[in-house]
Image (tube, rainbow, N blue to C red; front, side, top):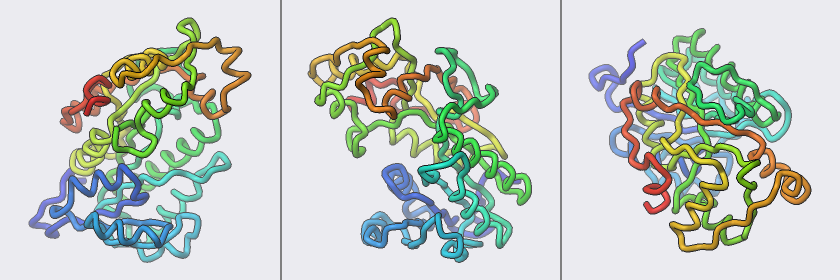
Length: 299
């Protein structure tokens, strides 16, 4: 399977972006004029915004398999950025998408935005993509299910599938994507003795990783789409506070956190890991523009 799209073969390549949110629009800015871009959205009100971004809008819902049939054979490559369903341990949305794509054999390339949460709690260990997954929540189990479906599809149809396991995404111009909002609310972080390692990627670097994976991703390959920073969560927010000129967040123990913080936030405070991003930089030949949060938060 080739790892590029030669112009002589079929002219300007066609990309279907499934889930045209913030990252999808950043990818579109990078590829506009070089690729023909299609975007699947479940919200008809977003058609004008997608057109303005150079994307041909396609209204369809991943929960409705019948509405996806026209996606078959539409694009040479697919960028799957849509989240799984909100409940259960399986991802029926990815199943519906793959069923539609398979009607004409599937695309040449498919890049999927997964999550580093598939590993569960790793006790602060630093590791590469060979580590076995151990999801601790249904949210992460749905992602593992999607990954397995996609890799099976790749092997069955000769599609070059690249899975990007992504940690926390941030950017000053990303909705809810900058720590200053949480810092302004005074949300506490864990005391140093209870703190966990966390990982991040700037949204612009993530978009560049998606583009690089379209061209250079190896078949059925997993990569960590993470920057070089190795910080515990509390240290991250303290450093962000200093950069933004805001007060440092209060520190609380794990018992107090369990009694006062929302379950979703608490779940992120219960998993500690450090992602090795060597594959990302070596195989995709990606040079991060924001390798540390210091440059990224000030961008």
